[in-house]
Length: 211
Length: 211
Image (cartoon, rainbow over all chains, first blue to last red):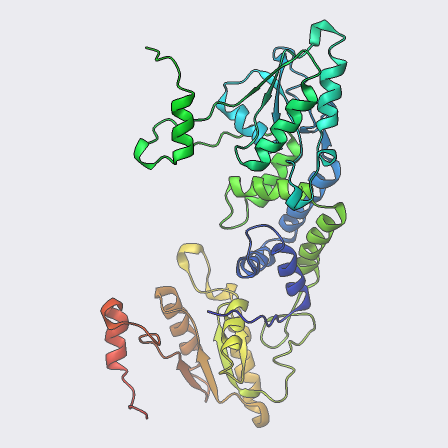
């Protein structure tokens, strides 16, 4: 059904324009959300918009790993119990949260802030690759915090592979191990439904059977 | 998959809390939206929040029909070419927009602002029923704008029927025709898949065949 847009109020139209600029929110949902906000007490709406403004205005990025943080150094980098010789390179803040949620990683991170993508006009200089390199370089002098390994935890598509390769080349001058995530069938995955590339890599990179 | 919540920043957590308070937005989507907003230029984010604040702070409700409006009287009530003797009673602003989009109605509206629902604690006094009654009553004196007909365009569920009946009783003291929307099979609907209530009403309220 076509949805003609005949707003009874310019204010409503502006709000729908703003809300529908969010990714994955169509104009119909935006109208629903705008009318929902209109029904809420004024304080709630101000609380809502203030939380968003404050996030954008006041959030900081960790001096070490570029993770978002409330302080100059994020809670992960500030944690002395973590292994600072292990740096996991990820694309975004969400990836850090995902890996943290596994509870399987005790090293630190480096957030690139994106991925090399010529189509989207994102080059190496738009990411925090230089900061990663200088982080590895500067720490080479001080043996106590020298990174022993950099894990490239980027996506497995062409852009991720390109970015991984670029970083690998940049780090090859240093005495640091560079590794990448294991890829293969997911736990519980059925062979029948796995794509050929994943299944192929799973066979090539087979692991010793553990009991 | 469980989604543990380990936010790297209180500001981010507050924003996710705020965004996920919207209907139909889970915490995962809220996080995605918050991180999207974080990547936008500051001006865009302020424009976004300002549009919402202004909607809530500055929107007006039409003095006649309680439709949202930028002025004291909405564009529909201000339109002299519309039939002011015909008042269509609807639950919400969205219903007005839906009916306007059909292009089939040239009367005016009355927005109740909800529906009688004892479960949700909404009684007649929470709606603009009194305003509707006084609107019908006051206009009885002035024959030029006397409403000839009130159309109850409420939903067909128990709450809608209850509200319709309540309003019908309130208006019975006045010399005004009260009608309701035609219900039946939708255009293009298949008999096989219609629910029995709808199909039953379609048979009872059958219309003369027109060619």
